[in-house]
Amino acid sequence: MRRNLALNPYDASSVKGIYPHASANAQTRGQAIFAPRNAIDGIAVSNKHGFYPYQSWGINKDPNAALQIEFGGSVDLDTLVFTLRADFPHDSYWTEGTVAFSDGSSEHLSFTKTGAPQAFPIRKNNIQWLRLHNLIKAQDGSPFPALTQLEAWGRPTRD
Image 1 (cartoon, rainbow, N blue to C red):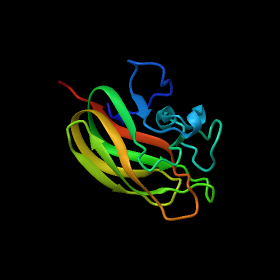
Image 2 (cartoon, rainbow, N blue to C red):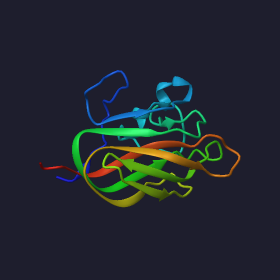
Image 3 (cartoon, helix red, strand yellow):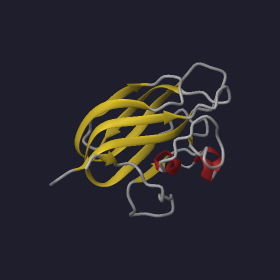
């Protein structure tokens, strides 16, 4: 059955072996309201930032920030959906990013300034993880781009 294979409202950085699992090389001030897990918790309220229901993955202004989603097995993907945090003018946003996959391939994406979900058709088979990186921030006055939600639609691979 087709579903959001990245969804895990119970993910935690301290728990290993539970999938899907989100991890990152950056997190704003180490605060839970900006943890990588927030990008896969299923809550996509993007017009503010902070405590529930406004949590997001915050990158601590790191231009090299990267978010990885591990699926815990092989999956076939057909669509990626990104909801950028849009607490404008406090927030900035990314204009571009790259998604790398465990099969060695990658896709370049272009984002728009919106808090609405942005869907990208993608065909990937037998992948175990994806990594969002090479994020390019818009040229605006805010240093705070963030990700509210990442959805990876598809099916578990049938071996």
